[in-house]
Amino acid sequence: MYGPGVGGGGGPRPFIQRGPNSGSQKPALSDLPPNLKAMFEPRPIIEYKPPARPRKHDASYTGVSQYLSLFEITPPPAPVPFVPPVERKIQMKEKLQALHAEKNDLMASSWDPSANPKATENAYLTLFVGRLSYETTEKKLRREFESYGTIRNIVVVDDQDGKPRGYAFIEFEKEEDLMNAFKKSDGKKIDGRRIVVDVERGRTVRGWRPARFGGGKGGRVAIKSKRVLAEESAKAAATMDAERQRV
Image 1 (spheres, rainbow, N blue to C red):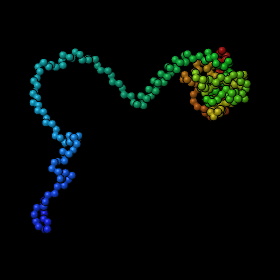
Image 2 (image 1 turned 120 degrees about the horizontal axis):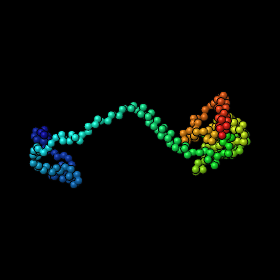
Image 3 (image 1 turned 135 degrees about the horizontal axis):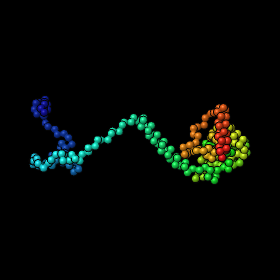
């Protein structure tokens, strides 16, 4: 650049070198380490290749007419009809229910409650007590149910490891005591849990299955009126009388 000289005189302005290597005679690239210096080196020269020659047509190529006999001549299979997701879910649910029912039938075919050596002596005087706390003992059940009548035997059902399964069977001396406990103890709270009671149906009702085989009464404990309880008690008593007459 040109500008006014020192003291106001005209003339060329002296060139001033700037930068980290302004006082050196060699470029800054030569001071880089080898690993960084390799990044700035030029690429190798591309090797020369002669142009590709066009291929000549091969007369030995033929068409596909000789393979027509290998093609399928039967009509294609019918397309699978579209099933909406909601209907597909329903079909899958029904299929699973059928599989579970078949499994339950197979397991229930070998179930014989009358052959259980730990069962009570008289099934028609036995009360089923379910939804028990795992902390409930035989002594606790006897203290809670002896107010309804004389108890002959109590069986608290355990699993193969000796742990309680949450239900028990109570055998009374008289049928009046059994019906009294059946009417008044349903929904009673024992050890913080409301129990459900029923007559023993495994040995008294034909075709009865426990809950683990897809049977049982199911449902949750509901608040029942005295009229509903009386009707259920009368129905259970009639069922027991009918089964007793058959035997």
